[in-house]
Length: 113
Length: 111
Image (cartoon, rainbow over all chains, first blue to last red):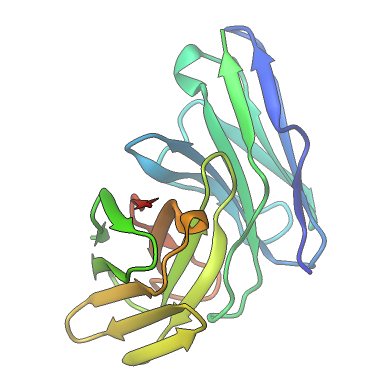
């Protein structure tokens, strides 16, 4: 079974703090993604990566950065957290096959106070 | 441009059949996925369609018409545990291209 894990289920941070969200997958997938999900807005893509050290901006990259130093790990960084970044953050991975689905991690509910 | 539309909310009765529709307009098409997401949990894969027609998997079926840019998810013999959001997602181009997601349809199953 594919497993995508995220470092925390719940996280509370203060405005201005630097926040790291970690995601690890064990299926040797090339592609990894970070989304945020908010009520009424659905899943919105922040960044994705199709290879080690490669990254592409998604629909809402402002205020975020990412790092992919190893194939299995994709980190999302909030350089200076703000209250409007309070959200559910979901990581996903996918192989390069057209027919393959994305596999999601359990999510991190981040609250910025 | 990329646009995926699905109803925001639906309600259905336990034991009944419900159809959740999805229409899409995307630059390129390599298949359509349906996911189920229970409140507070991650989306999980339900089905994938790339050719026109109906794919059946137990109580769940998914239909695709590429010429109409249309899909639906059919849930039969509804159970309370089917209360969840259902997300439609299109694979635009290439295996390394992110899926484009609809906003999801929240289904409530009532007794």
